[in-house]
Length: 86
Image 1 (tube, rainbow, N blue to C red):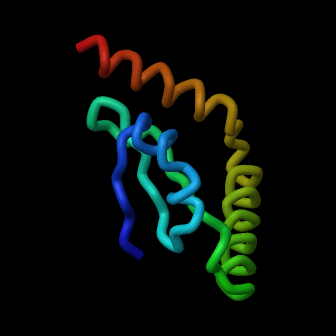
Image 2: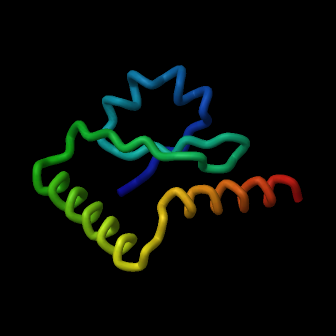
C-alpha cells in the first residue's frame, strides 16, 4: 500500500482531505517521520479483522516475553533525543 508523506503543518491544514483518503499518510517533521495516520474509512471488514488479529498477536507476544510497552516507548524517546543531539 502506497503511503503519502506530508509535513506536520500541511497535515494539520489539510486534515479534512487526508481523512477522505484510502491510503496511510506518513506525517513528517524536519524530514523525519513522526507518525502515521491510517484512515479507517474505505477499509473493508476483512482488513479491519486482520488488523485486530495482528494487534492481538502483538499484545500476546509482548506479554509472553514480558516486554513493558511503556519501557519500549521510553527507550525509543531516549534514543531519538540522543540521535537529535548528535
